[in-house]
Structures are given as structure tokens and as C-alpha cells.
Length: 396
Image (cartoon, rainbow, N blue to C red; front, side, top):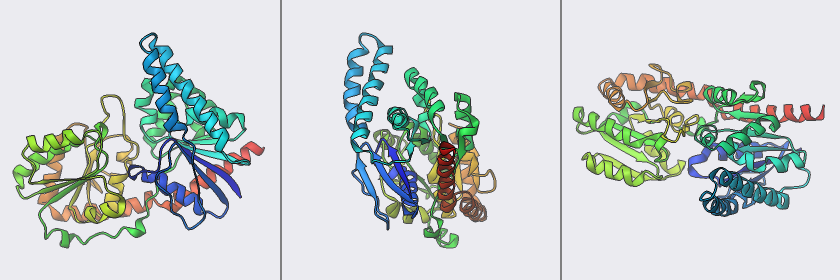
């Protein structure tokens, strides 16, 4: 029985289903005794096997105090302010883990390098080997902070392994200084057996429809998507768009819908869980997502929503961005356009609406591709291999 600590800075949220799915799958294994440690635990994980979920509070408490210190010190010396903020966060994380982590813990998985730099010193002190799972912003926009980047270089030395969901992020890690031999690409798992597509002929009885599911943030650029949809409406005035998600750009999205005269054609449904969003997703013709590198450098990781849409046999139209081209195959399961080229995105949507046979062909190919690429059993077995390999290496 392997005693595994699974550590993350946040709660398991609607927008981080990949964490929830991994935790549940590993916990179901009879050879793993998993304890989930997070900065805050509002949502409970449901599994058939007993699950240990501990709110360490290291993230919640650390952020408040560290930003207070940062805001005071940056008026005097900005570089020292960044360092002081990190020291406060690391100290709180160390103290909280010391109080909460279970005796006999053999290995840890940490979601996000931003969390890993807060807790790795404690794990080293306890001689607990650890795996760092990077997802996107933690190796893109976060490295703008020179103190964080310096700590990331130390993490490259001490971590037993880095896991990423795309080859694109593997390359980013290497270019940042990580050892290629320490990096494993493990795709996110999606339970395709529970996803049943709606027949295309049934969907085509309704007006043309486009859907996007995700947080309303700069890197997902819902504004570009709305500008693309306005061009689609000029060709197909009865077309409809649904946006599922919430986030910091919510008010800007609402204003843009009004400014572009899209109020009668766009539904903005807010944040919904999978049980609520999947039936809506299944009823649409096309999935579109205009992911970009945000102004602050933030990038998507693997982008799970387009993959879920493909399982519903929706063709995906997205951008050439991070790991998206690794599962949206040009002309086979969907179409890819350059970032910020909303006119070309509109052209691709229009082309599909005119050619419903293409919607069906791309959609069926997309489902086959994701079933092969994102098999949840394969993800779980890969994680278990990595855990076993690291433990054997430590023992030897």
C-alpha cells in the first residue's frame, strides 16, 4: 500500500475537472492510500473507496499575509518585496504541512509548479520524493516574477519528475531548464463511456449553433469569439451561440454582446458543472474556442473542453495555441486558425454550416481521436508507473 499525498493550492473546482478526475482515479486503486491536501476544501470528492481530504489552509492564509507584506515592501524595494512575499508563503506552507501531513507519507504529487515552490522545502526536509504536474500558467505567465523563476530552477533539481499533458509544455519545460529525462507527457483522461453523442440529423433540425465552454479569461479570449460570431450572423441570421462559463471578463463579454447587437443570438449561461453543461453541449452543431497567449504571457495547457466537445461528435474550431493542435487535427477533427484571427475563425464556422456532411465527418473522427488519446485508464496506469519508478529509484 503506497501512502500518497496529493497536494494542490486550491479546492477542486468546476474549471479544474482534470484534478478531480485524477484524484478519484488514483484513490480508487486498492494499492494506494491517498490523502488530498489543499489550501481550501469546500467541495467534497466522491469515490467508492474511503477518501481522506484535508484543508491545510496554507494557500488561503499565505496569500492574505504575503500580499500584505508585498504591498508594504514594494514601496521601499520591489525586488525584496517579491522575495519577502515568497518567504511568507513558504513559511506558512511549511508550518501547515508539518501540522497536517500524515506520518508515513511515502511520495507526493503536487498540482502546479506554483504550489510546488511553496511546499517542496518541507518535502525535502521529510525525505518525501515528489512529482510536479504543470498545467499552463505556472510555466508561462508566472515566470515573469524573477523570484518565482529562480525557485523554479531549484525545483528542477529537487523534483523527482515533472508531468505535463502536452508535448508543447514538455518543450517549454526543457527550454526553461528542466531535465528532459525527468519529464513525462501524460494526457488528461476523459470518461468517454458516459458521453453519448446526439445524432447529427437530430441536431440539424434546429438552427445552426456554436458553443464555447470555459472560463471568461484573456487566454480564452471570448471577445474574439464574439467578433467571429458577428460575421457568421451576416451569413446565417438564425445562427445561435451559447457561452458556458464565468470569470473576470464577464462584464466585458456582456458589454460586447450588447455593443455588437448579439443579445438575441447569444446565451451567456454562467458557470455550470459537467452534469449541467454536457446535455447543452451535446445539442450544438460546432464547438469554437479562441485561445491566445494573453498580454501577461498566460497560456492554455491542454484545453480539456474542446476534447470533451469532440467526444460529443462536435467538430472543433480553435487556434494554433499550446497543446490544442495535439488533439484538434486540422481537416480531420476540426480546423485551426492563427491566434487573434477571428475573421478566419468565422470563415471556418461558415464553411461547416454550409457543409453539414463535414460537421458529421469531423465530429465522428474527433470522438475516435479523443477516445484513443485521452483514455482515463491509460492516464491512471501512467501515473502509477511514474510513482512506482520513482519509489524504486529512491530505494536503490
